[in-house]
Image 1 (cartoon, helix red, strand yellow):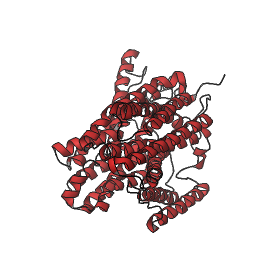
Image 2 (image 1 turned 60 degrees about the vertical axis):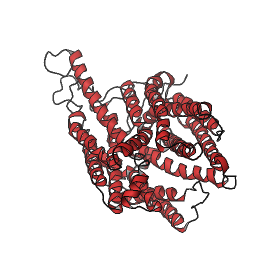
Image 3 (image 1 turned 120 degrees about the vertical axis):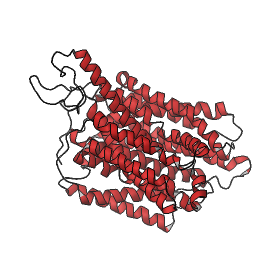
Length: 525
């Protein structure tokens, strides 16, 4: 019999490892959870149950602050999509320039995640989380007041910079607040359930806000939310011990520029529905070659650096590296679902933008419920088995979607297969997060979270470009009447996503394993 999965055990609590960590007998001093009372560590004579109740309230507040922040960051990647026509009319964007309203945020967000994750380890997770929120909120305010194209684009990029700092810190703060085992699994279940609806909720919110208010409120709505989170963060969140050291400047430059150019290049390269491929464009080729050179230089720099930005030993653990690869592949498929489904609904079935947004509501609820439920299932099933179940369900739903055409009905043609897809991917959220963070040294949770988030962003960008090429390259010669070419292209895109998800399932079976809970890795360089 295999030993239990590390995600399925409650590791002994370490001082500072999370809320509820108990100081050694006879120890005095402040609580290790950032100010929240610890069971048994309250005022003299205070009943233990009362202390537990108080600590529970503190944990819930911390979880809400972290989860809502992550929801806003993910929501902002899609919330402007429905507002793009109104933005174009108001500020005079060209068609090519309009795409940068979305791309500026994605490139800055994806390119700076590694640096943002490491900044949290060195400067302090809560400090970087709050600083990222402040920058994000200020950029949202200025973007909502923009009077020219360049002003809006600069603000969108600054939003991405703020999100890249705060997002890895948010995930790391869960690891710092909740001890490994069931407490962390439950917290991640709630966190992923809330955060997982960010992208589809962005489509719904963007349509509603643009229709009833103004496109400017798509950005301005972030301001009061950001102010509330900044005010609550010092009360709700702990400040784990920082890791002494300095920034690896050479690694930061090569790694950040390499990832940024990679995300930018693949977004520019994708074949569109007109069948026009950009993979051979000189600008795209130059960008991708430059990205490969910089990333190769990044690896060489990290091998020699005394205090590297990303210690390469973090990838030596087969389970963690496998988790990152699975996340890249599953993000590829998930981004493909959003893209091809939106295009199919509007261009083939003739849905309006608002109606398309409403279609995502039940899907989002399924995704949210599955993510929340996975926190309860990861104990009895184990992280590997639950991830496998989710990926198999998602692959089956995507294969079903691949047969969709213009004459299909909504129930059998779209609704039921997408329920399988969203339920499957929802089930993978908690186990993948647990395996990515399992055994990471306390001073490197920001780094691990940054790599985790970067894998999601890069996987989505690279995968969408690849799936777009597969989908549209062979569909342009087909008759366009009745949406035939678009339906065929979308079907091929769904089939490609199904194959990628099946590969992710095989990788899960090979690389994720059942092993006893391990001690954190040493935090040295």
